[in-house]
Image 1 (cartoon, rainbow, N blue to C red):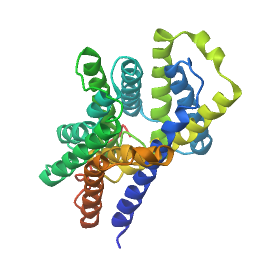
Image 2 (cartoon, rainbow, N blue to C red):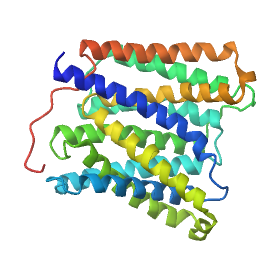
Image 3 (spheres, one colour):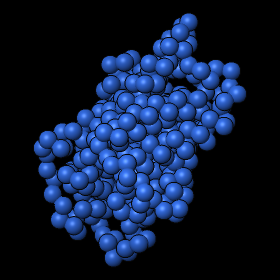
Amino acid sequence: MSSEAKGAEGAHAGMFLWALIVGLSFPAVGLLSEGLPPLFLTAIRFAIAAVALGAIVWRAPDRLPGLAGLVLYAAMGLCLAGFFGAMFWAAHQVTALSMATLYVSVPLLAYALGRVFGVERADVVLLATLAVGAAGALGLAWAGNADTGASLEFGLAEGLFFLGCLASAFYPVLSKWGLQRGWLSPSSALRTFWSLVAGGVLIGLLGLALEPVRALARMTVSDFLLVAYLGIFSSGVTFWLMQRGTGVLTPGTVTAYTYLVPFISMFLIFAMEPGRIGWHWLPGSVAVVLAIVLLLRRSASGRNRSPTPQKRTAAG
Protein backbone atom coordinates (compact mmCIF):
# COMPACT_ATOMS: atom_id res chain seq x y z
CA MET A 1 0.00 0.00 0.00
CA SER A 2 1.36 3.44 -0.95
CA SER A 3 2.06 6.12 1.66
CA GLU A 4 -0.67 8.28 0.09
CA ALA A 5 -3.23 5.48 0.48
CA LYS A 6 -2.15 4.93 4.09
CA GLY A 7 -2.47 8.65 4.72
CA ALA A 8 -6.02 8.63 3.36
CA GLU A 9 -6.94 5.64 5.51
CA GLY A 10 -5.52 7.38 8.58
CA ALA A 11 -7.45 10.55 7.74
CA HIS A 12 -10.73 8.63 7.46
CA ALA A 13 -10.03 6.80 10.74
CA GLY A 14 -9.30 10.16 12.37
CA MET A 15 -12.59 11.60 11.15
CA PHE A 16 -14.44 8.58 12.57
CA LEU A 17 -12.84 9.44 15.92
CA TRP A 18 -13.76 13.11 15.35
CA ALA A 19 -17.44 12.21 14.92
CA LEU A 20 -17.34 9.99 18.02
CA ILE A 21 -15.81 12.72 20.22
CA VAL A 22 -18.22 15.38 18.94
CA GLY A 23 -21.22 13.08 19.39
CA LEU A 24 -20.22 12.21 22.96
CA SER A 25 -19.56 15.86 23.82
CA PHE A 26 -23.21 16.90 23.71
CA PRO A 27 -24.16 15.08 26.94
CA ALA A 28 -21.08 16.61 28.62
CA VAL A 29 -22.19 20.12 27.66
CA GLY A 30 -25.55 19.40 29.28
CA LEU A 31 -23.81 18.86 32.63
CA LEU A 32 -22.66 22.50 32.84
CA SER A 33 -24.45 24.80 35.28
CA GLU A 34 -27.27 26.87 33.82
CA GLY A 35 -26.78 30.56 33.15
CA LEU A 36 -23.12 30.40 32.08
CA PRO A 37 -22.27 32.62 29.07
CA PRO A 38 -21.77 30.26 26.09
CA LEU A 39 -19.48 32.53 24.04
CA PHE A 40 -17.12 33.07 26.97
CA LEU A 41 -17.15 29.33 27.66
CA THR A 42 -16.21 28.67 24.04
CA ALA A 43 -13.38 31.22 24.22
CA ILE A 44 -12.11 29.53 27.40
CA ARG A 45 -12.31 26.12 25.72
CA PHE A 46 -10.30 27.42 22.77
CA ALA A 47 -7.75 29.02 25.11
CA ILE A 48 -7.25 25.77 27.04
CA ALA A 49 -6.90 23.81 23.79
CA ALA A 50 -4.41 26.35 22.42
CA VAL A 51 -2.30 26.19 25.60
CA ALA A 52 -2.25 22.39 25.43
CA LEU A 53 -1.19 22.45 21.78
CA GLY A 54 1.23 25.30 22.39
CA ALA A 55 3.19 23.11 24.77
CA ILE A 56 3.67 20.67 21.90
CA VAL A 57 4.43 23.01 18.99
CA TRP A 58 6.33 25.91 20.60
CA ARG A 59 9.69 24.48 19.53
CA ALA A 60 8.61 23.86 15.92
CA PRO A 61 10.93 25.72 13.48
CA ASP A 62 8.01 27.18 11.49
CA ARG A 63 5.82 27.98 14.50
CA LEU A 64 5.40 31.63 13.45
CA PRO A 65 3.34 32.03 10.26
CA GLY A 66 4.16 34.54 7.55
CA LEU A 67 2.01 37.57 6.77
CA ALA A 68 -0.22 35.67 4.35
CA GLY A 69 -0.61 32.92 6.92
CA LEU A 70 -1.59 35.38 9.66
CA VAL A 71 -4.25 36.92 7.42
CA LEU A 72 -5.60 33.48 6.55
CA TYR A 73 -5.65 32.35 10.18
CA ALA A 74 -7.57 35.52 11.03
CA ALA A 75 -10.10 34.63 8.31
CA MET A 76 -10.36 31.07 9.66
CA GLY A 77 -10.84 32.46 13.17
CA LEU A 78 -13.60 34.69 11.81
CA CYS A 79 -15.27 31.57 10.40
CA LEU A 80 -15.20 29.94 13.84
CA ALA A 81 -16.49 33.07 15.55
CA GLY A 82 -19.23 33.45 12.93
CA PHE A 83 -20.45 29.89 13.37
CA PHE A 84 -20.39 29.76 17.17
CA GLY A 85 -21.83 33.25 17.46
CA ALA A 86 -24.70 32.41 15.11
CA MET A 87 -25.28 29.06 16.80
CA PHE A 88 -25.52 30.45 20.33
CA TRP A 89 -27.68 33.38 19.26
CA ALA A 90 -30.02 31.19 17.21
CA ALA A 91 -30.28 28.50 19.91
CA HIS A 92 -32.74 30.70 21.83
CA GLN A 93 -34.88 31.50 18.79
CA VAL A 94 -34.64 28.53 16.41
CA THR A 95 -36.07 25.05 16.95
CA ALA A 96 -33.64 22.15 17.20
CA LEU A 97 -35.20 20.63 14.09
CA SER A 98 -34.62 23.79 12.05
CA MET A 99 -31.00 24.00 13.23
CA ALA A 100 -30.37 20.34 12.40
CA THR A 101 -31.99 20.78 8.98
CA LEU A 102 -29.81 23.78 8.15
CA TYR A 103 -26.62 22.19 9.50
CA VAL A 104 -26.80 19.23 7.09
CA SER A 105 -26.02 21.75 4.34
CA VAL A 106 -22.42 22.21 5.61
CA PRO A 107 -20.78 19.38 3.58
CA LEU A 108 -22.61 20.44 0.42
CA LEU A 109 -21.60 24.06 1.02
CA ALA A 110 -17.99 22.95 1.64
CA TYR A 111 -18.00 21.07 -1.67
CA ALA A 112 -19.42 24.08 -3.56
CA LEU A 113 -16.93 26.49 -1.95
CA GLY A 114 -14.14 24.01 -2.59
CA ARG A 115 -15.01 24.06 -6.28
CA VAL A 116 -14.85 27.87 -6.27
CA PHE A 117 -11.45 27.86 -4.54
CA GLY A 118 -10.08 25.04 -6.68
CA VAL A 119 -9.60 22.50 -3.88
CA GLU A 120 -12.40 20.18 -5.05
CA ARG A 121 -12.69 18.38 -8.37
CA ALA A 122 -15.94 18.37 -10.33
CA ASP A 123 -17.38 15.10 -9.05
CA VAL A 124 -21.00 14.12 -9.56
CA VAL A 125 -20.60 10.91 -7.55
CA LEU A 126 -19.23 12.74 -4.52
CA LEU A 127 -22.02 15.30 -4.77
CA ALA A 128 -24.60 12.50 -4.86
CA THR A 129 -22.92 10.82 -1.87
CA LEU A 130 -23.10 14.04 0.12
CA ALA A 131 -26.77 14.39 -0.82
CA VAL A 132 -27.48 10.86 0.45
CA GLY A 133 -25.70 11.63 3.72
CA ALA A 134 -27.61 14.91 4.08
CA ALA A 135 -30.90 13.10 3.54
CA GLY A 136 -29.92 10.53 6.17
CA ALA A 137 -28.89 13.12 8.75
CA LEU A 138 -32.10 15.02 8.06
CA GLY A 139 -34.07 11.79 8.53
CA LEU A 140 -32.40 11.25 11.92
CA ALA A 141 -33.21 14.84 12.89
CA TRP A 142 -36.87 14.29 12.04
CA ALA A 143 -36.89 10.99 13.96
CA GLY A 144 -35.29 12.63 16.98
CA ASN A 145 -37.98 15.32 17.05
CA ALA A 146 -40.91 13.02 16.26
CA ASP A 147 -41.85 12.68 19.93
CA THR A 148 -41.36 16.33 20.84
CA GLY A 149 -43.61 17.92 18.25
CA ALA A 150 -40.89 20.37 17.14
CA SER A 151 -41.74 22.28 14.00
CA LEU A 152 -39.63 23.27 11.00
CA GLU A 153 -39.54 27.05 10.58
CA PHE A 154 -37.53 29.51 8.49
CA GLY A 155 -37.17 33.19 9.27
CA LEU A 156 -34.56 35.82 10.11
CA ALA A 157 -33.02 33.76 12.94
CA GLU A 158 -32.81 30.70 10.71
CA GLY A 159 -31.20 32.82 8.00
CA LEU A 160 -28.54 33.98 10.46
CA PHE A 161 -27.82 30.41 11.50
CA PHE A 162 -27.48 29.44 7.83
CA LEU A 163 -24.80 32.14 7.49
CA GLY A 164 -23.10 30.51 10.47
CA CYS A 165 -23.24 27.17 8.62
CA LEU A 166 -21.69 28.88 5.61
CA ALA A 167 -18.87 30.15 7.83
CA SER A 168 -18.36 26.63 9.19
CA ALA A 169 -18.10 25.26 5.65
CA PHE A 170 -15.53 27.95 4.78
CA TYR A 171 -13.14 26.82 7.55
CA PRO A 172 -11.77 23.61 5.93
CA VAL A 173 -11.86 25.21 2.49
CA LEU A 174 -9.66 28.12 3.57
CA SER A 175 -7.38 25.72 5.41
CA LYS A 176 -6.95 23.53 2.32
CA TRP A 177 -6.54 26.54 0.05
CA GLY A 178 -3.82 28.07 2.22
CA LEU A 179 -2.11 24.71 2.70
CA GLN A 180 -1.86 24.13 -1.04
CA ARG A 181 -0.28 27.55 -1.52
CA GLY A 182 2.25 27.04 1.26
CA TRP A 183 0.81 29.89 3.35
CA LEU A 184 -0.02 27.56 6.25
CA SER A 185 2.26 25.14 8.05
CA PRO A 186 2.26 21.52 6.85
CA SER A 187 1.94 20.60 10.55
CA SER A 188 -1.70 19.94 11.42
CA ALA A 189 -0.92 20.74 15.08
CA LEU A 190 0.40 24.20 14.19
CA ARG A 191 -2.57 24.93 11.93
CA THR A 192 -4.89 23.87 14.72
CA PHE A 193 -3.04 26.02 17.28
CA TRP A 194 -3.17 29.24 15.26
CA SER A 195 -6.79 28.81 14.18
CA LEU A 196 -7.78 28.20 17.83
CA VAL A 197 -5.88 31.32 18.91
CA ALA A 198 -7.52 33.46 16.22
CA GLY A 199 -10.97 31.97 16.81
CA GLY A 200 -10.69 32.22 20.60
CA VAL A 201 -9.73 35.91 20.48
CA LEU A 202 -12.60 36.78 18.12
CA ILE A 203 -15.16 34.73 20.06
CA GLY A 204 -13.96 36.34 23.30
CA LEU A 205 -14.44 39.81 21.80
CA LEU A 206 -17.90 38.76 20.62
CA GLY A 207 -18.65 37.59 24.16
CA LEU A 208 -17.58 40.95 25.58
CA ALA A 209 -20.03 42.66 23.23
CA LEU A 210 -22.97 40.33 23.83
CA GLU A 211 -22.62 38.67 27.24
CA PRO A 212 -22.22 39.91 30.85
CA VAL A 213 -18.77 39.07 32.18
CA ARG A 214 -20.18 38.73 35.71
CA ALA A 215 -22.05 35.60 34.61
CA LEU A 216 -18.72 33.75 34.71
CA ALA A 217 -18.83 34.08 38.53
CA ARG A 218 -21.40 31.25 38.50
CA MET A 219 -18.77 28.82 37.25
CA THR A 220 -17.96 26.12 39.78
CA VAL A 221 -14.81 23.97 40.02
CA SER A 222 -16.65 21.09 38.36
CA ASP A 223 -17.75 23.44 35.57
CA PHE A 224 -14.15 24.50 34.97
CA LEU A 225 -12.92 20.90 34.92
CA LEU A 226 -15.65 20.00 32.44
CA VAL A 227 -14.77 23.01 30.25
CA ALA A 228 -11.11 21.96 30.42
CA TYR A 229 -12.07 18.46 29.25
CA LEU A 230 -14.16 19.90 26.42
CA GLY A 231 -11.34 22.29 25.52
CA ILE A 232 -8.69 19.58 25.23
CA PHE A 233 -10.81 16.91 23.56
CA SER A 234 -13.91 18.48 21.99
CA SER A 235 -11.94 21.50 20.72
CA GLY A 236 -8.23 20.68 20.58
CA VAL A 237 -8.32 17.04 19.49
CA THR A 238 -11.28 17.45 17.12
CA PHE A 239 -9.80 20.50 15.39
CA TRP A 240 -6.48 18.67 15.06
CA LEU A 241 -8.24 15.65 13.55
CA MET A 242 -10.07 17.91 11.11
CA GLN A 243 -6.85 19.67 10.12
CA ARG A 244 -5.16 16.29 9.75
CA GLY A 245 -7.99 15.10 7.51
CA THR A 246 -7.98 18.32 5.50
CA GLY A 247 -4.32 17.79 4.67
CA VAL A 248 -5.20 14.59 2.78
CA LEU A 249 -8.90 14.70 1.88
CA THR A 250 -11.08 17.34 0.30
CA PRO A 251 -13.28 19.72 2.36
CA GLY A 252 -16.48 18.01 1.19
CA THR A 253 -15.22 14.58 2.27
CA VAL A 254 -13.96 15.84 5.64
CA THR A 255 -17.18 17.65 6.53
CA ALA A 256 -19.28 14.66 5.41
CA TYR A 257 -18.42 13.04 8.72
CA THR A 258 -20.75 15.53 10.41
CA TYR A 259 -23.50 13.18 9.20
CA LEU A 260 -22.24 10.58 11.70
CA VAL A 261 -22.82 12.89 14.69
CA PRO A 262 -26.64 12.46 14.81
CA PHE A 263 -26.08 8.73 14.17
CA ILE A 264 -23.94 8.54 17.33
CA SER A 265 -26.44 10.70 19.21
CA MET A 266 -29.14 8.21 18.22
CA PHE A 267 -27.31 5.42 20.07
CA LEU A 268 -26.95 7.65 23.13
CA ILE A 269 -30.71 8.27 23.05
CA PHE A 270 -31.35 4.53 22.84
CA ALA A 271 -29.01 3.91 25.81
CA MET A 272 -30.79 6.49 27.98
CA GLU A 273 -34.34 6.05 26.63
CA PRO A 274 -34.78 2.53 25.20
CA GLY A 275 -38.49 3.17 24.74
CA ARG A 276 -37.76 5.59 21.88
CA ILE A 277 -36.37 2.84 19.64
CA GLY A 278 -38.55 2.55 16.55
CA TRP A 279 -38.56 1.91 12.82
CA HIS A 280 -38.69 5.64 12.09
CA TRP A 281 -34.94 5.80 12.87
CA LEU A 282 -34.06 3.22 10.20
CA PRO A 283 -34.23 5.20 6.90
CA GLY A 284 -31.93 7.97 8.12
CA SER A 285 -29.51 5.49 9.68
CA VAL A 286 -29.25 3.45 6.49
CA ALA A 287 -28.65 6.57 4.38
CA VAL A 288 -25.88 7.87 6.69
CA VAL A 289 -24.11 4.49 6.78
CA LEU A 290 -24.42 4.18 3.00
CA ALA A 291 -22.87 7.63 2.48
CA ILE A 292 -19.88 6.82 4.74
CA VAL A 293 -19.35 3.44 3.04
CA LEU A 294 -19.34 5.16 -0.35
CA LEU A 295 -16.76 7.67 0.90
CA LEU A 296 -14.54 4.85 2.15
CA ARG A 297 -14.81 3.03 -1.18
CA ARG A 298 -13.85 6.22 -2.96
CA SER A 299 -10.86 6.53 -0.65
CA ALA A 300 -9.73 3.02 -1.55
CA SER A 301 -9.84 3.95 -5.24
CA GLY A 302 -8.06 7.26 -4.58
CA ARG A 303 -10.82 9.42 -6.09
CA ASN A 304 -11.65 11.63 -3.12
CA ARG A 305 -8.29 13.34 -2.84
CA SER A 306 -7.63 16.96 -3.63
CA PRO A 307 -6.47 18.49 -6.90
CA THR A 308 -2.70 18.66 -7.30
CA PRO A 309 -1.30 21.29 -4.90
CA GLN A 310 0.25 24.40 -6.29
CA LYS A 311 3.90 25.21 -5.60
CA ARG A 312 4.85 26.81 -2.30
CA THR A 313 5.38 30.51 -2.39
CA ALA A 314 7.80 32.74 -0.54
CA ALA A 315 4.97 33.83 1.75
CA GLY A 316 5.04 30.39 3.36
